[in-house]
Length: 399
Image (cartoon, rainbow, N blue to C red):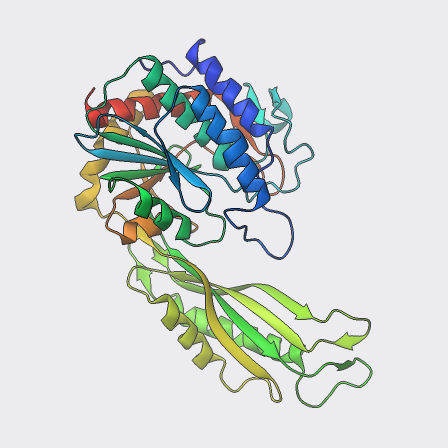
């Protein structure tokens, strides 16, 4: 019994769930450390005191407890194919919203939008998708929808730029999914691939000194500048490696941190964090060796250490395997028009399940807000995503 994107009734419960979720903090704290542990108190409260009780309230009783403060709701008779839908909890963007946890609904005409939207930090990245999973569970349980197979609604706490949480989920599930759809703001496109990324860490140790008497050797700032220059030269070489759909590899420094930060003091240490984008077949560990070779000999009097940090693998579902997407594509076609296959410009978690041979794609509502500023989602888009996911389940299990 799918509903129209503009219909009252069940859609009102969907919006009510989203309002409730939008009012509960789930953000990664601001600062240089952008990673968050899956059992961080914010996420533990959000998952165990908010999400889990909401699934229980719609009648979900078959809840699989999983490592890393995660769980999955299992639905269906278990006799046929397996579909997994995955929503994430850590909120990483829109950090400067004035009222991040308001859950307000209004029409933001000042932003050029002429229909009701829900405001809240994480509504596009996380909470719309969680509300849609709740809607699916409520619909299946209330309407007694028969599912010949296994539907898994997964709550994932990955916030450390790794695939650890997904691997923990997949290791704990009773079945390996035949298709995994990661719910993520893709503008209603089906993202069939993305480049991977490894953060390569370049640590520089030198000599601290008063700025009035800089040492001849061991100058960390000058060494950092030379390292960055050489990384630019390496980037020009690495960008010649490309994939016809995924794009190019890259070597881009995106963070430089000096220590200590003291009055009129040249620092004794620096860390340069390098965004090293990956294509299928590129060894993340070997990228650190390549950078080490490129910067060798810089910084007289400085010690330089290079090592790979957090890593997300590339994902790519080739055209010859995309027939598994037919249930999702048919649902999009019914509600939006012809489905579009796209490549996600960043890196996300699809590479983890994909590395295990699981067809993995991303799909979800558009993200219209500013990266640091307001986060909002059109209610019509929320309802449309919920309707598409209901129909996807219908087509996948042929109920």
